[in-house]
Amino acid sequence: MGRTIRICKLALAAASLAAAPSAVAKTTDPVDRYAAARLAEIGNLDGDALKGYIKLYSDAPESAVLADRIFDSAIRTGDMAAALRAVRAQELRGEVSGEAPLLLFADAFRQKNWPMAMLAADELPTRGNLGFMAPILRSWLNVAQGKAHDLAIVDPQTDTLFAYYSNDQRIYLELASGEYAKARLGLRGIAATGGDYVRDLMLRAAPVFAAQGDDMFADALIGTGIGADRLAVATLPIDKKRKAKVLANEGLSALHVRVASALLEQNANDQALVLARIAFWYAPDSEPAKLVLANALSAHGLKRHATLITESIPQTSLYWPQAIQQRVGKLEPSEAVAVARDASQRWPKSPTLALLAAQSQEAAGDLVGAADSYRTILEDAVKAGASPRLRAYYQLLLASALDNSGNWEAARAELDAALVIDPNNAQILNYLGYSLLERNQDISRATAMIRNAFEIAPDSVAIMDSMGWAYFQTGDYAQSIPLLERAAKASGNDLAINEHLGDSYWRSGRLRDARYAWRVASQAADGDAAARLVGKIDIGLSQP
Image (tube, rainbow, N blue to C red):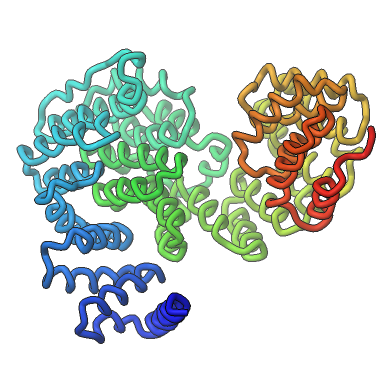
């Protein structure tokens, strides 16, 4: 009973706090004040929480818990001064986090306190998994002081992380140091690598070479950076000659953006937010820094703050489509359709925004309208001379919308046509092969296509599942089960994969394992799928 009463009191406190944020300061009892600050933090009222923690800490500066809470709230709100105070308090106790030296380095760098910045860089390798950044930080210190950057080239086999994260940083350093011939070679070498960090490098290098009078190379860099949107950009009032010189703070921001993005992909959201905040602190006008910070804030449930950041990116920015994509991802389907459609009208030649509008239609359930939109995108791509791979991708999206709307024959025709122009596209081979298997059509061809897809992309979970299911359809459970087990392990509680695995277990005589797999699948099921799985768990599979 006592536990229930306490929970109810906390809920009431949270409600009153949301209605009156100043509630944090209305009591003199430290325990009540801490509870109020904690509730404010839980309710995403981080500004109020931070004020409460700071006031408490002034009365109890020995509290490790309060220093930690101040740091977390300061990072969420972007109060870097408060975050620094918390880090220095943690440092006195010898309990700093792995990101703390990065924060201390950034503070010293911004104040041009080079010796303190060097000390922070030297400390970084002793504090966790970010030590690979230390040599890059030291190189930027050299450049900021007018010295040669001296960033070593290492064998990826001996220092994988440093080699991976220094490939673009070396080019930034060359641009900042005026080594344009070296930077040009590096840009040509990295162009085919792909990834957002390459896009950011290309777009940042373009005005540097435009200022050198090489508009042709600058235009090529922009075209590589924005890809299919190059025709849309041609109609915008963009000044390629702005930001003619790369500054050290920009290069450091780019480094933190790239690492923060990687951490978000790994679901290391707390560490990612710290690095995203530091990236933005170095370069508050940097649009890549804004985008990664918005992503990190969204990962922490701070969607309103994320939206405010993306809305600060103007329509004339090369990053505007990415800002719109982030905003749309946080909206309800009907709102997302309206925002995406409006953006597409503002950039009428942008495939990125046209695609976003079509995908928003599909997510909102307008499958026929989405199919029409995908067809228009495909036709525009053909007119623009887009690559076979890109056209095939658009055709796959069109086929998926047609299939989901119940028009399988039209979808199959699009998939067959896509394979003509891109015959080794693993996604299309898998989609068509699996769809044929499910409909019991042309089984030998379907199996051959899935096997081809599996040879091209053996680590794809979706293709692994299809290959396992193809073996199941032919009664080869000895080969089906290992593949489906691998796919299930990689996918968690995916409904289709675990149901396939359960079916394979049952047919091979492993009845208890089958029910375990179906039970996992049922956790993600509703409607007809849930009823089907309940039936399987109760009575198993009927005879084939």
